[in-house]
Length: 179
Image (cartoon, rainbow, N blue to C red; front, top):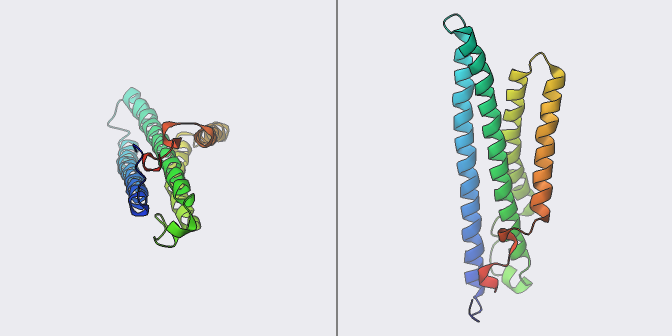
């Protein structure tokens, strides 16, 4: 910052501001994901109850398209929330790197680690459960396809977590107020 050293309060406000932003993004992602999933499950239920009034080709297309959109939205939410979790982890580490004299004067920006981690975990598990529910709907009789699809989603998620942890993305650079 052009040779200017931020005060402890400025650094704290910087960290808290970014954590609030990231938590707001996670909240928005969960809200739109849950809203869209509710709509999709309702539409799927209506389609299954109106089988007599729909043409067979249209009925088949809708029975494939709606769960596919549901799974895609669930996976997109998981990816977005993984991004949020990665950013939150970065800002927590930036705060944790401060000397004890700073810690003593300010509360933890995002709470204790274990309750915070459990809260972040719930934002990942809910979309995952919804993806599994859609897979059960689609693969109701074909158990092998269900387990293959579930394994593929878990492998994708595992890769994304691994990649986010090792990457040198722009979010991993030094905080501007630390420069």
